[in-house]
Length: 218
Image 1: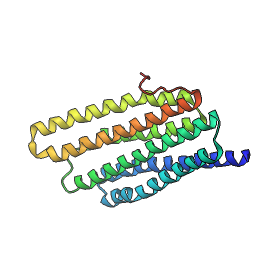
Image 2: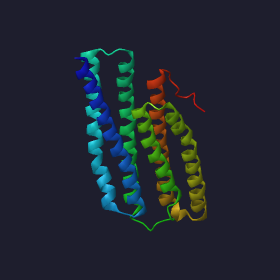
Image 3: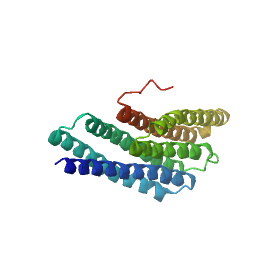
Image 4: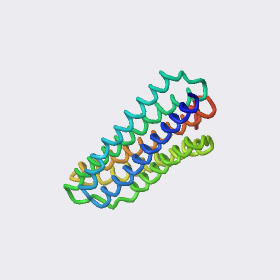
């Protein structure tokens, strides 16, 4: 019975990792869609969100089943409750990719406002944070989890840089405002991806050390 339970825990972890790989790929794909002005690729990102949602339901149901049937003790209980929180953040990262895809399609209806430099840099950092937070989860690596939390500041700084640059465009020419606002929104969506990766990293620290660090890490 105990062996079966731990096999189910391992299966849960693998499903969570598959979902993580999918949402990370969604971020990479949607930024390609934005930079290359590819409506078809943006629509693919939107359509693939169904698979992200399916993983969300699968993980949630498996966690509830494990809690109900096995009444796990401290360490395993923390693992399952952590998985339930991580899956919520991964699902929301998927939602941010969809939001970016929708804005990309809207932007493609007009000439490109400016070369995209900082937004792809933001996306690269945010996607790496997602990957590293999940690596920290798999390896129970709290040092890596804390590095992920620290990386959030760099994404925030890039968001502010994007905002200041686009504000200049809007002040100089009112006709740029609709496009600039969409790009500002994309920067906010990427910032939220980084925030969700930070949440996952904080939950890894909780899983390993048994203490909540949310709102306490500098």
